[in-house]
Each structure stands twice: as C-alpha cells, then as structure tokens.
Image 1: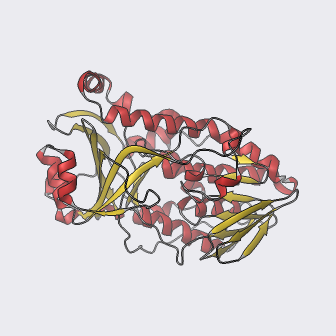
Image 2: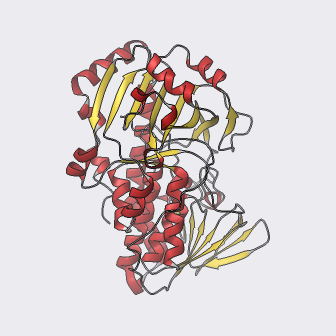
Image 3: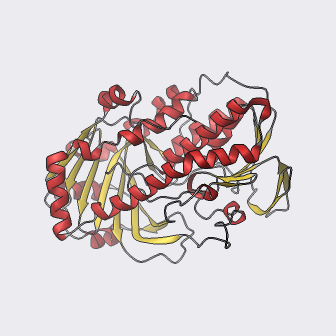
Length: 427
C-alpha cells in the first residue's frame, strides 16, 4: 500500500562525496539523453559506466531540482549500491525505522511495517528517504566524477529526426546534436515522447489530471514537537485526502505532503505553485491533532497538480527504433506507491546492464527493444498499483471500513511489497 513520494521547495544542495566510481569501461557507442533530472542523470551514469559515450541535454540554465522528499525502497537503493553510491547516500539520506498508517480523523493506528534492520535482513538493502535535491546532487556528482558524459545546459530539445544509422536533435537555441541513439528522460510533458507514436494510429493523448492536488512542504525537525519527530514514514488516511511525512536531509528536516481532491491549476505544466496553509486546512477539513501539529509547523507550502497517463499497454511506449523513453517520460505515475524515482533508476540500471552484456556487438534498436520488453510490464504494474492505492487511501463509507478492518487484520502483509522491493529484475 502506502510509501508515498512527492514534495516541495527548491533548497540549497548539500555536497556529497562519491566513492567506488573507478570501474570505467572504454567509451565507444554514443547516446543522447534529453533531460538532466534524476532519471536523466541516472541513465547517463549507468550507460557511461558500461562504456557508452553520452551527451546529456538539460533545458535549464543550471543543474538543479525542485521538490522536497522522495522515498527510495530497497529496489532503488540496490541500484545506487551497485553504482558505488552507498557512502554518498548515507551522508544525505534518512533511513526510517517503520511505516505507520493512521486514520486522519480519529488518529487510530491502522497498520505498521517495520523497516530499518528488517528491510536490510529481508531485501539486502535499507529503505531510504531523501531530499530530491540531495538525490539529484548525488547523481550529478557521480556523473561528473566519472567523466564520460558531456553536459549541455540551455538545451531544450525541439525536434527529433531518426535515420537508419542514428538520431539527431535540434534545440530551441538552434544547437544540433547527433548520436547513435536517443533517450527521452524529459518528464511528464516529454518532447521526445512526441516522436514515439502510440503504435498504429498515431500520437497519444496528452497527460491527464488525476483530480488530486498535492500540497508540499518541509520543516526543520527542531521546529516540530518532540513527539512528532519520529524516524518513520507516517501516513494519514481520510475521506478524499491523505497526508504523509518522513525525515529527509540526514534526519534534519521533515518532508510533508497533503493530497486533497480539487480542480486543476491554470498552468498544468508547472511543477509547483505557491500555496498557503489556510487553503490547505480548509481543503482538508478536520484532522487529528497529531497531524495538525505537523501541518501547522510547515513554514511554506507549494501546490502541485497531480497528472499522469494510463498504465503502459505495451513495449512500444518504452522504445521504438533508436529512441527510448525512461522514467516519467515513459510511465508517469501517481505518488501513492512511492516508486516514481525508483522506476526511473531501475530503467537506467537495466539499460546499463544490457549495454554491458552487448559489448562490441551493441545494436541500439535491438537493445532498446529489449529494454522495452523487460521493463514495460513492471512499470505498468506499479502505475496501476499507485492508482489503486489512491482510491484506497481516500476511501469513504463501506470501502473505508473494509480497508481499516483489513489493515487491522493483515497490516504488515498489506504494506510490504516483496515483488517490488526485491527488484529490479536482472536482464
């Protein structure tokens, strides 16, 4: 069930150290990567480690990340560990001891899932929570330390042209780049995705508004009452709403997210909009005093309209020819399974594994098709699970009562996800 990921505010990025990046392969085949967020940097690192010369095109003038907290299940941490980034992760992440699910109205504890040592024992890696900016900096530092990736700023992709032996793109500033293949890591509103049709019949529909709005904020742990500083992922479930909070920034801050039903904002492309506590509290209605203490401590709020696409229906939505999509460009998902960043990391790791296995015989169209075949069903399952969780989280009436009874009876079994946390599957 829960384990959510979303968050707010642009904040200073803490420097992190990166060790274990000496495992380099000779650089041969070339790959263009559109997008310098977490997914794009992860793909660049994974492919560069496998010997691919990469050029990464980032639309912004600087490398930065807007947002606050994300959750990294053992499947995502396993990827970072394989890339030699565990020491860097430990410097900036928190490692919650448990998930606690409570009723947002009554405060009743509905269920718990031990994390901490239990996650390590069961899955071989811990469950981590991290500020999005720290995760971005961790990956950027690793990419820069590797040295096999050209980084280009102010390079928003405008057009894509694919030929029999390569791909070329032009940017909005008139730059021209070419390579043997192109990976679109440019998010929900991907420009590269427009090059990949929905199969026979043409282009896909635009992203859809979920009907949910996420208020996001962070607060210093020292500004919270002592009893609200638990090293845990706490999820509050209520009719047409839910809240989640967990530590980030090496346990120095608490990430807080409140999701309510509402109308879309004027600019659906915007990652976040200014918001205020009064609007949030009005949208929530009455909530338990323990949750209210956390909400009232957050100094600033951002508002994020939650958009997505339907779950993937086939490998053609991941790759066609010499062009592939990863992360939100391929499979944007609602944050109710806390796996958006994790699936982007898994995509990147899988492509790196395939490149390494192919060696000198690498054939990009064949390899990208293999990536699509390996990844689409798992990503579709996570997308569908996140949508289903949203219904369960916000349940009212008989469904809410049934949920609470099931949580009381099964608790840990409902919250744990062995099929998910044991991943990513090996190619």
